[in-house]
Image 1 (cartoon, rainbow, N blue to C red):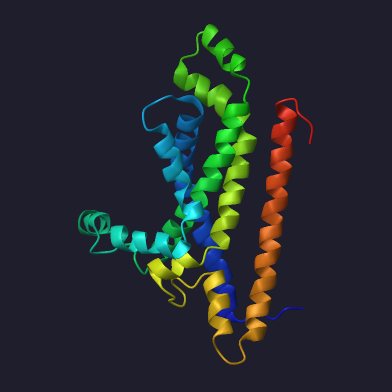
Image 2 (cartoon, rainbow, N blue to C red):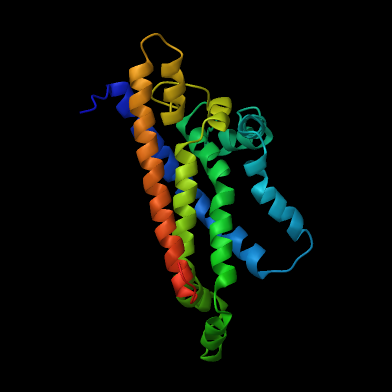
Length: 232
């Protein structure tokens, strides 16, 4: 049986907490971006699409550095939030959640967008014909039909957040109990003598969590395919 130390348990708990908060906080923005890209036509749509997916192609360290410049206490956004709302991201667990949200955002948007695009829009038209306005149609027809894709996007974003390292350590550093998430803890253990056992235990946990997330995502994707009349 694996014997986890208090430090290892703390890193696991912090990662689960940070990944959960980051995923939940980014969901409203992910829904808006996915719906806009799937349904609307507007100038700059291609630019928005590229901006949303930029974290997938940028080195994570670059993303973390940009977050530090923008959201740090001396950054244009970070200083404003600190001064007027008392919200601090740099070198805090909240910053780790923000970094995880940014890195997982493209995967969330992509999954939700595909769900919106695959939807039979005649069902929405029928709801409007029966007198439902746009907001009611979206809440009672569009969202329920897109739910499997939304859940799949959340799972993928959560899995990406669990494995996030580069942006996190660049933006919030490696502070025990505050910003030392699971990947950062693994890196830390590999840098100290006798830390191989701790690193291996955390690696096994990371593998199990990632595999679980992928299985759940695949099951949800199959449900989406069955819902739109395909086969999985």
